[in-house]
Structures are given as structure tokens and as C-alpha cells.
Amino acid sequence: MAHFVLSPSGSHGDVHPYLAIGLALQARGHSIAMVTSVHFESLARTAGFQFHGLGTEDDFQTMTRDPNLWHPTRSMRVLFGGETFRRMLRQSYEHLAAEAARPDAVIVGGTLSLAARLVQEKFRVPGVTVHLQPMGIPSVSDPPQFPGLTPKWWWPRAVVRGYYWVGDRLVLDPLLAATVNELRQEIGLPAIRRVFGAWRHSPDCILGLFPE
Image (cartoon, rainbow, N blue to C red; front, side, top):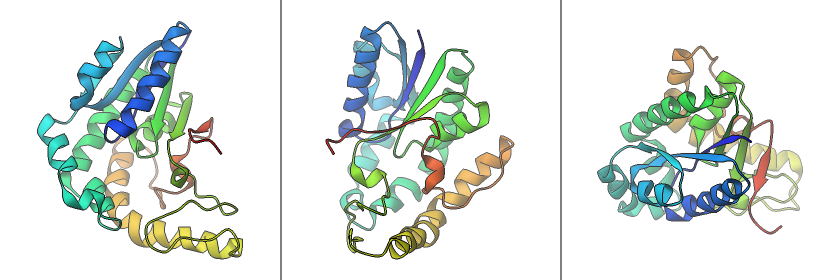
């Protein structure tokens, strides 16, 4: 049997699918720990999971009530642009690293669970990346739908790759790279670019939890 460490990031819509995953694994005899916002502690403990809380209830309420969180172009700055992200990334890394010390640990992170990938890379533990929406997988043959300009399936693949490159280097890296690479340096890992590119996908297993 394995010890699965679930690390969803986000709201109820992100966390509830992980509850289902955890319950299914638990029914098969595996042990489960969850690392996510303190807002979800009662849900996790009611399911019988071990739990490590991130941030405070005020952190959760402040973010979910920010009207920019639902804006198509401003939401990424709400998620990754402030001190809260830096603090939560470090807390998540510390909890996941402690769980990864178990010889039977498997780290399960979501689209936004960057700490899960850091721990997997640092400690070389088995890991799974779970995407709940197609936009988590930047396909060049069947591009997902994004806010604003969206690449089309009939675009030349080089153009679609260029679209992703621009988004990673000019939009996401300015928000993410400094914070992620600061922690990477502290834990002895080299700096990376395109934090939200291929690196965030586990080299072991990727699950797309949507029909197609």
C-alpha cells in the first residue's frame, strides 16, 4: 500500500475532486494526507485524511472575494502576484517535503500545485499531476480555450508553440519565476524558466480528469 499526499490548490471546485480521488484510494487500502488551504480542514478530516493546512481563513476569504479573481486577464496576478503566494508556496513545500520522507509516499498535485513539483524534483519521489480542465494541458494539436485570443487547431504548430512561449515568458514568468527560483536556490535546485511550461507536469504521470 502507498501513502498518497494530495495537494490541490484553489476553491471548492478544485478540492472536491481530490476528495473523491482520496476516498477511492482509501477504499483500496492506501493512506491519504491532504495539503491545502485551512478552509478545507473539516472536509479532509471528515473523509478520514491526515491534513496540513496552508495560510489562514482570512487568506482564503480575501482571495475568493477579490473581484479580479474572476477577471479573464487579472486573475493570475491575484493568484501569483503577491506575498501570499510566496508564503503559501513555502508552507506547502515544507508540509509536502515532510510527507515525502515516507518511503511509500506518492505526491499528487494539481495544475497550480507548484510545490508538489518542487518536492518531487528535489526528493525524487513518485508524483502525479492532475488537471481538472483541458487548459491545464497546452496541446499544439487540440489547444484548450483561454480567455481572450485562443489558438486554433488549424494554426501551424510552430505558431501555437510561439503563443505558449509568449504567454509563459512575458506574462507568467514575471509573476512566478522570481518567487519559485528563490525557493529553488534555497533547496539546492537550479533556476528554471517557463515555470508554467513543461516543468510543472510530472514526468511520471499526468491525469486529465475531463471526458475527452
